[in-house]
Image 1 (cartoon, one colour):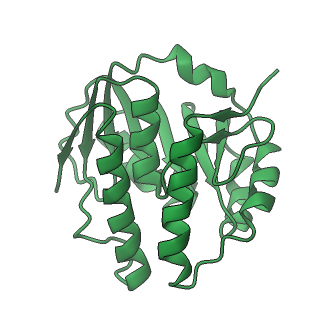
Image 2: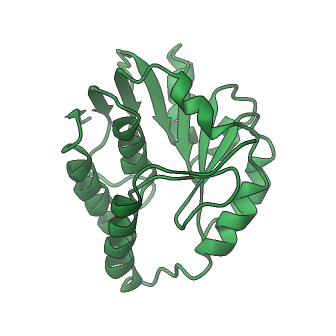
Length: 216
């Protein structure tokens, strides 16, 4: 029987307190997160326990704005469909994609690896549209998980990918592409604050293991 997993209850609670306090003042509404979590669990097509079967010793995480020169080492995680497409074009097949289906989600259709698909109150429509086309989907959520789903600390896809690798026991995490001073997709106050939160949470995750960041 597939089960829900909470990687670190206290860190997840802290994460939620931090991002709700920061982002609520910028117009984000988190009231539908529980509804999104319930819905996401019905689209689970993978098994969260499969995560422990992977070799997490060394992990390379690619984030937008990934721009080539992959140089992969160990387990490979792509953040968003955009990065998955770019890596595939460079001949690199990720083991995992972490996404909330908001940046080139069509690239996820047909992908055979594990997809950690994040559900929150603002992406329910996109989740329903794309989750059904993912063959190995493990839902991640922002509130206490139900059924087949996982609660990972953090707020953005990028820092959740780092937290995931850290809690799965990685001894060396290389992040390629993350740059909190270079917003992509858009450059408004909300996006810039999300990047600052991602930087904050990645720094917190660095207490757990060795993390190096290569910016583009």
